[in-house]
Image (cartoon, rainbow, N blue to C red; front, top):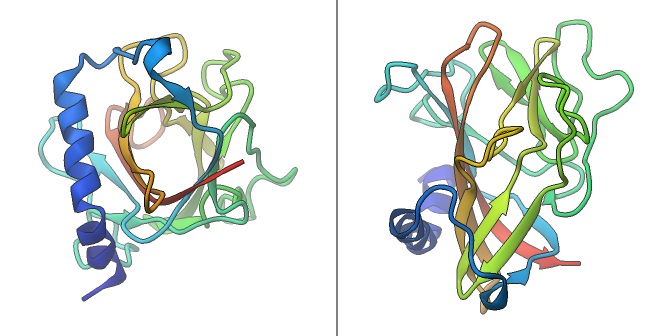
Length: 217
């Protein structure tokens, strides 16, 4: 059995809890301040984390010929040099953002992954490269075992282009990142989706799932 499928099985209970949380609340809902505490630290990215890209018509997903998964609609993610997504800070990119082939060199959050012949990386910026809006650092709160957060600053870099892949999108409050957390094991799962604007995949939707262990700062 592949590491991907093993990771998915380990996170199944958490994923189910996240789905229940999403179904119970409107997309823009947030927990009451009195019921929540801040999650400050690193969402370490481990097996079972992935990116998918849904066609504008919905339903079907783009098949990435470079995917390491058996199902090529899944692009597997592995931890970058920082171990994963860090709350409360911006995780930028090297001064030389791309190599000569357009491969992203942003490797703090995830190790750059091949996608349709070119590697993409992830970074979080204080100013969104697409809209030029100032955006907040990633923040998350924990209410019981439910995680609520915003990843507005998250941006994918690919082929010398940038695509905001945060939730909610800059200037919007329509959706957030939702997940679940097991305090005994420190295992978490986070999921969100973000519409792609511009470039060859304009109108597609990025679907993100991060899972692993959360390490408090």
